[in-house]
Length: 377
Image (cartoon, rainbow, N blue to C red; front, side, top):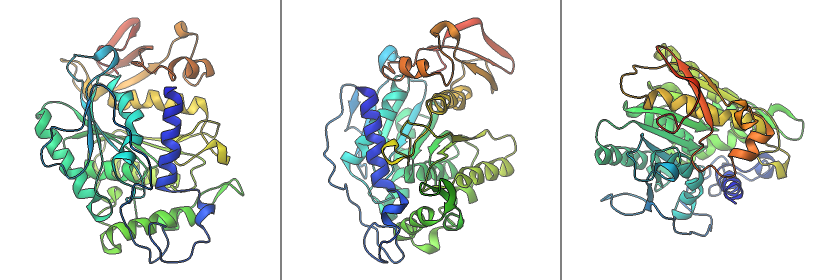
């Protein structure tokens, strides 16, 4: 059941954020929230129905919040334990899709991190020009809430990935960003090509241009350079994931972000993950429309998430560990990318307590395989 909820959330966020490029390629100029030249940005929840969050999640307690939020405590095997870090989750929606019901689409992602032992803050924002100021407000409030020592990371999808990267550019305490389908350079975006489901090649610009005009509608053309994270890279560890069949965000956007981050700060960890085609839903792709990612690619993406956050939450006494070996062993009769691994782990996701061995610079968590629930999740 949880797997179905996760997939439904991605479908709805994909519809909200940036529908398949062919659907709007013939839209007339102007209009509202349609990503056409001359269009305007107007906050909306698109009629999605809101349902309250479950146990362990609070929607009150942060005074003066500009928008709705859900503060989740560590769950599963980590109930009652101190959090390993704070993960802020930011939903997509073309910078206009906002509201409680839209925020709820990111609950599966928040739950994943709660079950890894993290405190989560799943946030909304008022949309359009207020999007970025609001996410910065939540960052500052969250930092005040948890204090200066707890690691803080951000995860986001689509326009939420853009806002996550901008948060890292503006707040140096952001330790890592996990960005799915991120618009990273709004200036280069309209001239880059993305996947075309008709030709099955990366040869169309209609999708990227729609995102560009959504950004223009939200922020104004004069602000696009200031709001392009690739032009203002920070030092956060980055996981930049884009589906090969993404028809809205070119894979070049993640590559630009990674190149900018490592050029500005040599040694910055920037992992560009281009997920191979398959039958699994991911940001901006949907198998019912002929696009998707492979199970192997998605399983590998989950492991890359762990690799991204591992040094951030390393145990006391380990200084800047460099994780260079993360594997899922045959003890589960599975390996990264194996179909059985997907079937075994993803439907439960209770704490992603599969056995992991991590080896890095100056330490070896072993010998043998160990359960990664003490610090690695």
